[in-house]
Image 1 (cartoon, rainbow, N blue to C red):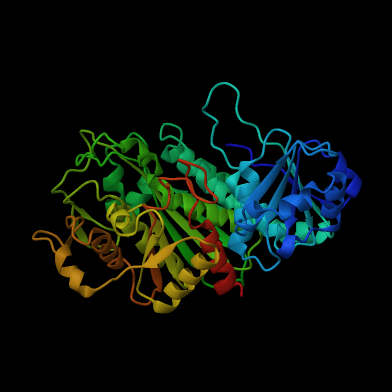
Image 2: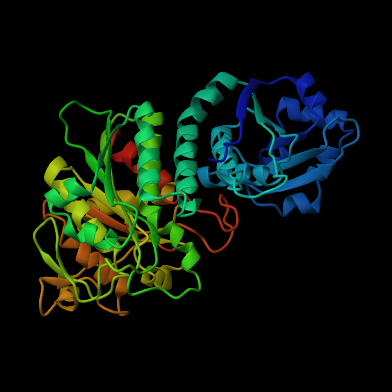
Amino acid sequence: MPAPIEIHFHASDTDVALKEAGRIVLLVGEGGKLSAVGARVDRAAKGAVKRALASEAWGKLKAGDALELAWPVGLSAEAVQLVSLPAKATVIEARKAGATIAKGLGKAGALVVAGNHPRAAEVSLGLALRAYDFSIYKSGEKAVKGAVRFMADNAEKLASEAAPLAAVAEGVLFTRDLVNEPANVLTTSDFAARLAAMQELGLDVEILEEPELEKLGMRALLGVGQGSESPSKVVIMQWHGGKKGEKPFAFVGKGVVFDTGGISIKPADGMQDMTMDMGGAGVVAGVMRTLALRKAKANVVGLVGLVENMPDGKAQRPGDVVRSMKGDTIEVINTDAEGRLVLADVLWYAQERFKPTGMINLATLTGAIVVALGHENAGVFSNDDKLCAALLKAAGSEGEGAWRMPLSPAYDAILKSHIADMRNSCGRPAGAITAAQFLKRFVKDETPWCHIDIAGVALPATEQALVGPKCASGWGVMALNRLVRDMLEG
């Protein structure tokens, strides 16, 4: 896996700043306000910093943007970067500032003069997220980013504030690693092994293999993977950080490590991106990693169904009928509508075994949600207004776009099958909604539940503030971690 960027925290020291050979980054408050060290850097640079702050170019910058002075006279630094960040900046603006710093990083690294800025910890998170680069399969010389040192008036306090955010960053980057991996590396077995390794963090991890899944009656899930050489699995990760005996909250993820569409095979154009079809499972894994790293005071269980959807002589066919763990029969109209079959069994298993206080599933489920919401928002469907509101609030607080979509009994008629209890695919109209309506049939009335379709946000088409071009986003780790913090630990 790619090594995360090194970030350290040190006490303010003018002599160290003036001798910095890499980049000096000054966090500049309202009205061009500099910290004491920043003001000393300006004097050493013969007033170049204050002249830049008085310029028209600086006046046009928004919070999180930067102006750069290359090879400033009087300093050893290769550049001084002036980052606009008012003391009252939002969390999102502070993370944007961190991303701005990350974009300019080179081998020499950087010294961030934070002074006593109240958002410096959030700057470190944005920096860690945007500095991520998945290049382990590229030959030749790789772009190396040096370490970043934050210089603060109270370095101990800043390090303490940054610690839980570092856990969030590690969870997001773990998810990105999983989603970015090619399918010949991230097989179902490799995926399960990476999750099992998280036992070292204090998670209880259990792997259910095909014989046990067969015994449990998970024929909907097993049917998806029966054409692949990779064995289907369900991985269960438990974090016991709350009160002993208290029922957990459940996260469930779709983990299709590669999706050809099966017998209903996808067009060749774009199929290479189906390495990301395990994105929902990747987010669940990243959230569980974050919760363990920051020692969350909550009981949470994460479950992922790991399969590969391949065409083969043994593969599931359109027209087949499978029986789910719940006992309902499903007519398979389209083998490319496989994610809902995987989730149906794992959702039911989660409720039967853990009786969760609430449940959220994530999946790169439909192209229809991309048509509806593009790459800016995930689609949220829910049977519980309170849980949905809490989820949307958490996503908004973390700057992760999410939009509630409708559920209605009116769509149930479309799911009817003439030979089974339901069919798995209903055609193009309201495709994301009918998929959610299908999943709702495997959620008990007493279970507060949200389904998040992340097909449009898991692998954004363009560069984003905290995500580089053509890179998995890790969307959802920050939002769900915030949800746990606010709703279960608050």
